[in-house]
Length: 186
Image (cartoon, rainbow, N blue to C red; front, side, top):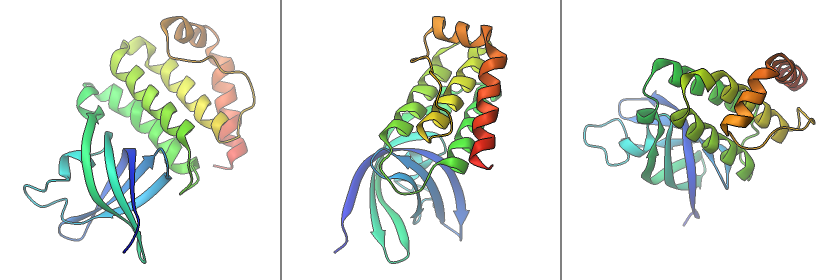
């Protein structure tokens, strides 16, 4: 019998595989970036479907098998996609998620990265559109710092005061993000 891992994760991508299955990319707090197969999730009435949509934060049960990871259970906790009401919000979230997918190492505990993405989603869902750029810059810089591509000081939180500071020093922060991405080899 294979060991079952119970973890909280954010669904980053969902790709169709075959007639009813999907390949799910999830950032899990205890497991890091994992690509797992979800069987039957695309069938009408599939129980796991709502918990495995893009930008859903869910409690997952995953199993490591011979052919990789498989999702055995999922319960939806926060439907972030539904909270991102505009295209601009979803595009901003997609850019940061894309950065995580390209840079994050697979399979390894990374609670910091999970926390950054969760707080980024919360800020994006609650702040005004004028602050989206600052939120995105700050999230990207924090991701790069956690992965070892930026060593400078980064303001904590996504408070209005912090976001205004980032916007006032926008060019400096963008240059740091660009240097971090360059250092990553992307």
